Amino acid sequence: MDFDKLVEIIKQVAEEQGYETTKGDRKFEVYIDKYNAVAFSVWANTSSGYIQVHQWEGGDTESTGQYGRGVYSLRNYSDVVHFCSIMMSSAAVRARRRV
Image 1 (cartoon, rainbow, N blue to C red):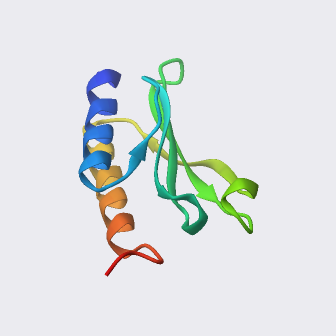
Image 2: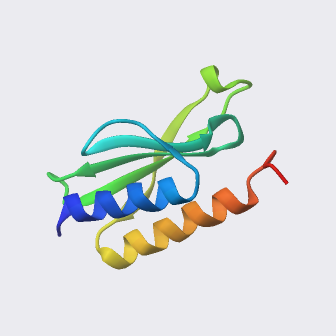
């Protein structure tokens, strides 16, 4: 599996959907608004052979929340496409979005 290509696909889709992306080639965050749980931590873990994705689990404010355990294991191109669909849907229906 070409981790670099899959990570690039995730980052490009995130950018198109209005997500912010932190720096990092193998471990990074994509988020619109952590407080409303539209944020993911992505880790292309080459030792395990898949890309782990953790979703934001909130607190009362953005600074008190954290990422939960891994909820997605992306093991092939189809998995990445499905995750990108989740990002797109999350961006479209998130709480407090601009109308």
